[in-house]
Structure formats: C-alpha cells, structure tokens
Length: 483
Image (cartoon, rainbow, N blue to C red):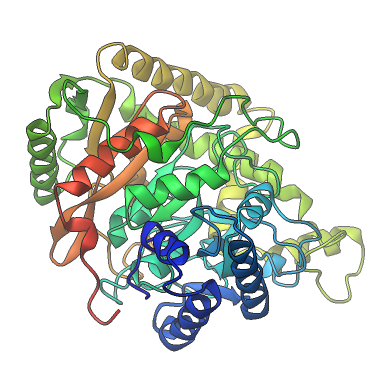
C-alpha cells in the first residue's frame, strides 16, 4: 500500500479496495519503523490521523467522493495546526501549540485529507540542506550520508522513502524544488498569492509560498487543487479562479515553445547534470515541443539580491520572538533587555542568527539605500527579464540545482557555498513566478531534477508538461533501496 500514489489511493478508496483507516495504520507503522533512519518527522499525530481517517471513511460511506477524501499527508512544521506543536524546526517554538489551523491545513482537512504528522525542516525555513533544524539533520533516503535539500527536506525525505504519498511544503528561494530534485520527487512552487500564507509562519513574506511535494505531477495537481484559492485572511492572496489542474494534464505538447536560458549552462553547472537536462529537452522535443535559446541577463545578480531581501524581511518577521508572548523564554532574566537577549540567543540557531544580523545590517539607516533598495531594483530587473522571455516562449526549462545532493556537513563551514546552490531557483521567488522540479535522472546514484518555469498562474501548464514527460519516462518511478 505504501507504494501507491495519491491518484492510486483515490481510486482504491473509491473502489472500496481498502479503507482510509487501514491505509493510515499501515503508514503510521511504517513511519515508526523507518523514520529513525531519516529523522523526517518532528511530530506524529496518530490519534488525529485515525480520527480523520474514520471520519473520511464515514463520509465515503454516505456517498461523498473526492481525490483527497481519506488520503494521508503530512504538513511541513511551519503550518499552524490547532493544538499540535508547530515548531518551525526551532528551539524557539519547541513548546508552541498553535491555537488555530493555517488556511492550507484547514482547506485540506475539509477536503478529507488525513494528517499523519509534522515534518522536519531547516530552522524557520532558513537553509538548503535541512541541517539547521534544532531536531537534527534529515537524511536523504537515496544515500543516508547525503542531505535531502532544504528547507522542506523532511517532507521530501518522507515522501521519497514512501512513508506517505504527498506532503505540504514551502518555497522561499527553492525550498520545494531543490529538495524535490535531491530526492527524485515532483515539487511545485505556485505563483505568489495562489496559496494562502495565513497561518504559515513567515520567513520572508514577499517570497514565501506554500505548495505540494509528491512523486508525480498528477499527485501535485491533486494536492494543489486542495490548497489553492483566495483567502480573505491573507492580504497577499490573489482573487484568481482556480482551474481544474487534473483536467489539463492530458493536453498535447505539440507546438509548445520552451525557452532554454544560455546563462543556465555556465561553468558552475555539473556537466553530468547538463547532459541529463539535454536528454530531457530531447524527450520534450519528441513530444512536439519547440526549443528556443533565450537570455536572462540579470540572473547573475539574483543571489546577492535575494540574500539581502530575504534576511531583511526575516529580521523583521522574527522580531516577534522575544520571550514575552510565546515561544522560548530564558530562565531568571535580570531585566527586560536580558530577557530579550538571552531568549533570542538561546532560542535561535546559528543560521537564523546569521540571517537576522545580515538583515538588520541591510535595513540600518546608513546602508538601506546601498543594499536593500538596490536589491529591490535588481528584483525588478529579474522580473522584467522573465516578462520579456515569456513574450517569446511558453515555459522556461533548465536545471533545478547545479550539483547533486552533497554530503551531510560538507558545506557547514562555508554558508555561501550552500547559498550558491540556489542559483537556478531563487529567480522565480524574486519574480513571484510558478516553478516546478521533476525527476530527470541520476548522477552517482543521486537524483537530479529539471526545472520548469511559467508565466503567472500557469501552474496547470507546468503540471501538464511534467505529466506528459512522466508518461514517457520512468525516472519518477524509481524507489530508494531499503524503502
């Protein structure tokens, strides 16, 4: 049962081949047995899961149907879940139980999804390796000595190891797409505003976006259907009709114009990954797509701009964690200043402290214009590059990451080396565009992803291309040994 995709589970439940309760118990037992190797979960919610599964079975018995009704999932541990620990992978929130459900959690629960637990993540979503979590690093099921990517590494590792069919995740600079590439999954970052951020604990508010992680594009379409839509509680949520993502999966790719930026194939890209990307391009050409070389001239400025904007927003967002209202509080503070300093010093890990300091510096009176304002101008140039490119092509294709997953600890002494791994993904967040990573092969036994980018609100087009590609390749069906 653990090998089934979301789509297969939906068909099995509809045909009464098994119940949601039976499936939930199988997966909970599997998590208990295998997750100690991976450390992909922070919290298991067995009682809630069984309760939700029984309720889903009762709804089906009463004639209800739906692709998510009775389907088991997990939530990245920055989506607030009422009465359940929501830690953000941080000591700061280890004792925090959210008093309400995030909109994404509430919408999926209403659709009948069964929550198995909360997945591990980089602390406050800051990282590319899932090594900054206070609960310890997550391991990549394809090789337990390697990282699964971050910050949604817990969700990715759990789905890749067949502990569950799909999970929610978030993407601030590639944190859905990069783990998807590293663990042989399909991951989708929707257009900014497509999925509500209400109840999603913020890292960088103008960049964060929730989305699905699953094994196939078909499953991502099912999960996104349940997540997307206008939310009056979120001022950045967009009032844009949500199409039936599954309905467009079968459309032909004949005549689809795919742009391949020349800047993507620079010296920083592993030549073995470049070869796999070319193989993917050839496969899409066989399906009728037309390939065109394009240019994104300001891509080279994206990383420095991102690593000014994101920390600046983080320093503001994380100022609320001060030891006063909720979260970690130091013992026996001498005065208010001591309370602030020690609570934050004890509650935040090294990577979070580093980014808060960078952000506070960039926003300070003497450096605001030189750093933050200039970074925002570069952000506009990056967006303009994409708008010009989409006048010529329908989607943009390239590598998701410049290298395969690295060994645990390999980049801990050089944070900038880890930041550079985001070179292909952060531009979509700066511009607010939808992006998808799908499996494209292996290098040294480690998965590699190909990235697709589309104009605003064209998630259906990305899912269509990925689905057609997956109908004609088998990379996404490979399972890590031992799982």
